[in-house]
Amino acid sequence: MLRKIHIISILILIITAASICSFAAEGEPFCLYNSEIVTSNENATYIQGEVADAKGQTIVVKNVRGVVAEKKVPDIGGKYVFRIKLPKSVIRKSKITSFAVNAIDANDEKVWTSCVRVEYKARKDQDIDLKEKEVELKFPGDDKAVEAASSAGLDLSYSSSDEDVVKVDEKGNIEPVGEGTAEVKVNQSNDPEYKDVTKSIKVSVKEVPHYTVRFHLGRNAADLAKDEEGNSEAAESSDDDTVIEQQIAVGDSAELQATADAKGDYEFLGWASSETGYPAYGNADEVTDLAGDGETVDLYAVWHGERAQEAVDWAIALAADNRYGYGQGTFKCNICGLMPKKQYTCMPFLAAAYAHGPRDPIMLAGGKHVINLNNKNFSGELGQIWEKVGLCKNLSIEDLEPGDVIIKWSDHNNSGHAWMYAGGDQIVEAVPAKSYANQIAVKSGAAAKLRRYGRSEGTPSKNYVMRYRY
Image (cartoon, helix red, strand yellow):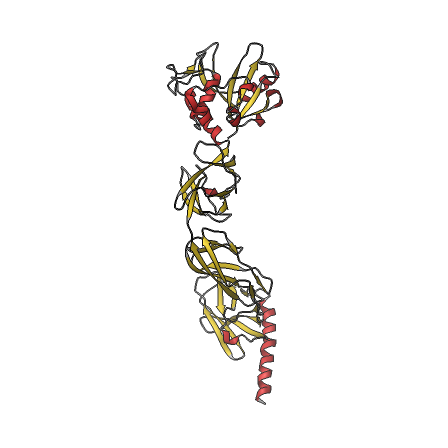
């Protein structure tokens, strides 16, 4: 008889809850966000909702046995969002449980009512198939990829117990960074359908004789100091230089640390062994024994266009110095101390810009900066650092880069003129003036002057553009 009464009570609660839910949906100022809850974690099941006019009411959650949880609402006279945790003991596994949710005012009177249905669905078991449980690595040395898979086909996450020994990325690549022992955990968690599972790998790292390669990325390159390829340590970053370090084992061959393809508008060309040198290594070039144990090798990034911009900046700064002007008939450089007067002709001025701006070793050699206007003289060592872009008649201003040298040449009298493109529509040049003082100046009109060189000024078929390779 008692069993029958208990069953009848449950049926009455269910019927009442159903009618309450329909009543609450008609616009009462009290609502639940999740009136249908499916949970796989009885330790963290919450009823959530809001009270439109919070005035100290108490939210009470009941089942057939009585009150199971409650929460006091503050007296704020406005909307209040509440969250009530259901005790683990009232979540019925493999069954649906109904709860009445009441709002009781300060006079202990029920003012609003709603209901919630909670269904528990247990998470299924899963496993992680781990190929190796112990790994031995050397530092410096190659990364090791974790071979693991969830039996449920889910994504895995990885973590290291000691990042001074090994680091591990989101793909499961283990990077040795120092001698010692650490544990790499392989984890699958927070899936609503499957239980959490974790497996561990013991990693031992032995340090071996090695040297350090310091990669200097240069100014304004802090965003490039990222270890995307492994085997590096993001080291120093400042307004002046950004440095990445890579350790390489003595006797081993290793790929040089790769960097980004560009820095702003500058394209990466390779690594030089000095700040003013030319590229000796490319991205990911394989090297062996660049140095001995404990030694350091410095390499410098060469960015196409950056040194040309330095030449432009130098030329513009000198043009602003009123002590310098145009002087006919010399290829010597007064800055190098080979000429007493502060003057340049057109091409020696531009050659000096590359000698003293980026301090190019070929242009700087000897202090007599000679590039003849005839492009046949861009040969020998000069041919290593200069290339012909094309004839002026085939180019527009959009084809030019800052630092390009634009040349007018005539075979008839073996003469002409040269100027540097400074970007935008700007020209910087050393030029004799007809109606005003001879000068070194920055002017506008680069596009128009390029067009003239391509049509009739000088000999159009001889007028051309040279570009500094680096």
